[in-house]
Amino acid sequence: MARLSRVLKLAPLICIILIAPWMASAALVRRKFTIGTQSVTRVCNTQTIVTVNGQFPGPTISVREGDNLIVEVDNNGPYNVTIHWHGVKQLGSCWADGPAYITQCPITPGNKFTYNFTITGQEGTLWWHAHISYLRATVHGALLILPRAGKVYPFPKPAAEFPIILGEWWNANVEDVIADALKRGVPPNDSDAYTINSQPGDFFPCSANDTARILVEREKTYLLRIVNAGMLHASFFKIAQHKMTLVAVDAVYTKPYTTDLLLIQPGNTMDVLIKANQQSELYYIGTRVYNSQPLGTGYLNTSATAILQYKGSSISSAPLLPNFPAFNDKPTAFKFTKNLRSLRPSVPKNVDEEMFITEGFGLVSCPNNSCAGINGGKAVGSFNNISFVEPEIAILQAYYNGISRVFTRDFPNNPPQTFNYTGSVPRSLWEPELGTKVKVLKFNSTVQIVFQNTGIITIQNHPIHLHGHDFYLVGQGFGNYNSRTDPANFNLVNPQMLNTVGVPTGGWAAIRFVANNPGVWLMHCHFESHSALGFDMVFLTEDGPGYSDKLPPPPLDLPKC
Ligand code: C2O
Image (cartoon, rainbow, N blue to C red; front, side, top):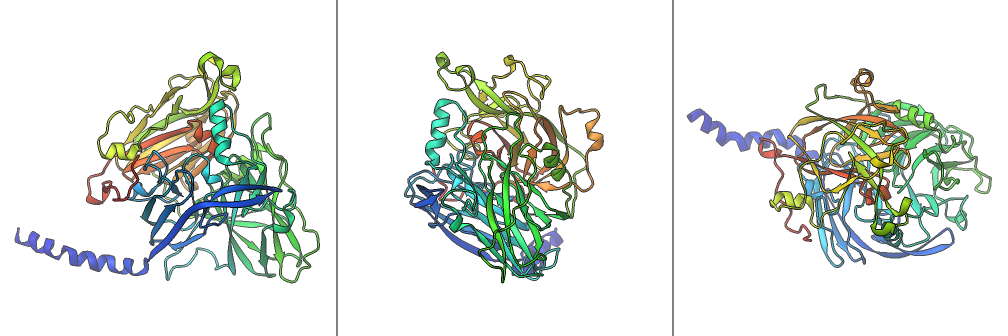
């Protein structure tokens, strides 16, 4: 007993000794985000858009792994706002995750909220964006996570680093675009331009003078930190005459992968090294839509471009353009993702919770067939045939305070029926149930999910993003998943870890993660309009036994609904 009490008295000292070297290299990084509006012109059209600190794209935040980031968000704009730190694991800080009505109520105009979290065990590029309605179209920016002081990249230090943000532009107020679509029950209008660092580039009207440029010197190597902030499209990405070496995806290092083409899903981030080993000229950096829908409609058949400009090149010469795969080149898209490998994998071998989740569209009937969708109904999205209904107060707040009737805990592990998922699905299976259901996970359980795309209305690639966790992509394929034969081909050795996976068009993808973070975590299609149509679900991870395995109390300034 005496010995125990002596140990207990020494405990704080032992803690300080153990923690001190770790603390020494971590810093506190403070930023202020002022949300406001700005008049911006693109493709000959002027719009008043919502911005952070008057910048579009918003400010880049640079931190080191282990740093504590504190961002005070002051909403001087006209709309409710929240900010999500896309891909940040938020260990023990679920309250700072940001999705509206999931972890917090929105910051109303005239009010503030301070996001406070530590970035642990992640290096590379992530990003931040508004997580309410359609505001992320203009409210987004890069989050660069460097190794902590004294540590280095697992590749030679580049001569310079450049954030490259892929986006979309509407000749309209984006809040009107989504409100109109939801009212009518149809998908929202497509964007009017694709952008790189908010500029459409030379192939769009009134844009050539402002094309984004990246200046390089011959024989030097550069790091491009690419974020796909696009709203409704996966993108092929190329640089004329230059190969890229992919070194990280979603702030997880990859086994270096040399390629001339990237496929980046909305939500994904990719770090690539490029060597300036060509003649001193100008080269286009270009992106083009990967649109996998069989009908191939609803996209612009044009590249957004930036220019890779060698020092000493003549600015007036015409840049070379890269060749892109066809917009619907499924095999190329599939192959790219299949080749990704983690640099330092550690895949959980045993699964505690197995889920098979169908995902895709559905059709809900409207009174007197009054909506503008098929048969007067409205299009929705769903997981396991449940289309998510956004609650009026945040689920995390309801859970923490024991408020009932906000959500139910009965999200199922399987769809209600077995059918030929990717075939032509009978109409009787098109109508989902509406609900705010969560899937409860035991602390530290290993979860395997097989996402199965359905052919309801149309087959399409869907980028599924899980908040608060990275997961291993252990398998993917076309057609219907076969639970007897497909697991034998899972890669449990060195698959890539991601926070967003493009589930192949008319196919499936299998992921594994450990539910090691207590709180409420949204999972959704990162096509923003799909998420707005109910293509969302929520995990609730229970507290674990240890002191640090419990959800801490909410910050005092957490907004109220
Ligand atoms: Cu990038 Cu739920 O978000």
